[in-house]
Length: 311
Ligand code: FUB
Image (cartoon, rainbow, N blue to C red; front, side, top):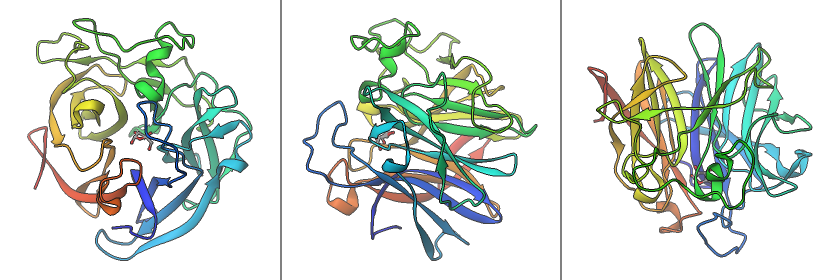
């Protein structure tokens, strides 16, 4: 749907009756591919909008660049956005000057930006893939986390440990983290807590279950009283979801949303727009399968008796 730029990790939101997309902006800087994700070397964000899904898409141009983020050194990865207290907040991960991924926030009076970055990352945040969720009562939450190059495994003790490894075997898998945001959306009100993901027996999902364990790309949406946490399983390349009754979880595994697509990564958002739910995601078809040069896609999504299905 967007072909003049490489785009990925699309976070979709409805603001002022339009659908806005906040994707990563992929580019090729010649960095060889590795499991650390060094090839994902992005340096700015564009914001897109549309009046209808399937209609013309407006590229609003550069909304934030790496050089305008005082604390960041490289890799503007998957962003998200929220409208909080009359201001649009863009949440984004980047490596700080020490090479650690942190989550930053930038604000604008307009959904398309340009956004002005806060001078420091959000205190207490770590790892990648921020997802903001504003509940019906107006309370905003921030989720985050991603394994391997996303460094989530390095924070198991509460402090960064470069030697941290993903749990193995029957040990509980790591979940994303969540924390409430302050009323201005710029800080956390509490220390991030780990979101528990349970299997069908109510047992924490074991680390060996790579077809269902959290890898990266958390997204939370609510329909009725049910909260849905969806995410990528990383090295098995699925989008899966789990359901719960609170933004904090626990969430119980409920199924698969998307099978593997062309390209290593899969990352998505789910949004209701004009009476229809949509899955926005990406694959690598635009570049003929180069993992780090991706393109955004959209599919209709349906809820049926609490379950999610496509078509
Ligand atoms: O776009 C860079 C990284 O790739 C994202 O942060 C991950 O979710 C994966 O899509």
